[in-house]
Image (cartoon, rainbow, N blue to C red):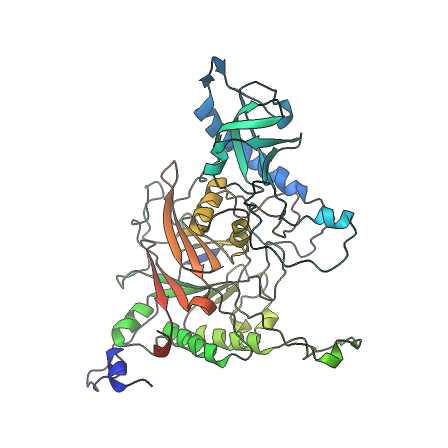
Length: 507
């Protein structure tokens, strides 16, 4: 039971005032979505998946070779000068050399589709392992290109996060066993970073495009002295079908974003939130169990409508109601996640407007070229918010990379992806992906200012720096269904704060 004293402490019980409250206006949002991961509607799946790795190596190799050449050119060890070899196949035993290639992790616990097909295992897949990493040392690190593959050994490998699909340059010698003994290795490191407002140069009041800008400079041209704008990022809402206790927190989240259940000072802060980004897993995975008699009988095909025994419309309807109440006051960017009604392979395409009968009027018309108040985007997604280049995902890329590494440092894995210059290195090996043949969109051609990953077990943030003074804010967005937490970012400094939405009894 909540007492009146507790309500007063929260600022919800106050004396009436004769002074009229000052009208509040929500900050506007400067926003542009790049569409970097959009697929053609008539996409084909006949092409080979290996082309992704060849494209990745071809595009990252020139920059990586410059870094490796600067680090190792003229290196002399035991009287022998290191030289560069163009292909893995050109490595010779006993010669000190360095070579660039793609890492492949040979791990017994990792699923292997070719092995399943060769053994004709046409049965349901076993549960996915929490970790592919083996503590018995049976994992092997390979380096490959279009000419061949060689095994890498050496203690230096233990000091770096290596996963299938990352591009590295390694220096060392081949031993008598045909293994490449690595003494040092390099990544491409952070890509060139665009200046703030690179995509919106026509905004009046912006600083000169030739002026160097860091995270604390170049204020928003439209801030009008009302304080720093903020964006809110939430993930893992997982609207339930029947859990009414969790619905209370979801309603509190809605009231917080609308400013309906706060004191005047807090309402001023909420009014500075110019946009909400929902980073995946908005609809819960709750499924209705099949009745016992239904499991043995063959179901008739239902041409129209849906089968109520296999589909529960309540979660999607609740999410649609949530959006329809929020959208009149705040623009929303919506990324799909692993649990949402979108394609399961990377990159996930936007959730279809038909899923939002009450909110789809806020979605832009096809071919309009401008984002709607509700912008349904891809996962991963790249855009510009308040002048900052932003890259965000629903979490599948980090969750898959997590399985390769004997560590729980998810921020370190996010940093590694930035230094790989690849946002989904394990695709398509263990992370399902569209088989790209002409382009590799997962390559970070330009370094983001903000990189967030949704649906994570806990909140975390870090700022990393590149060799050319690039600064990247990394943010782990916690799953709201598990933590009841959302993230607020100050769009002038990119400082991050965490907000917990919970009832008094759960605090």
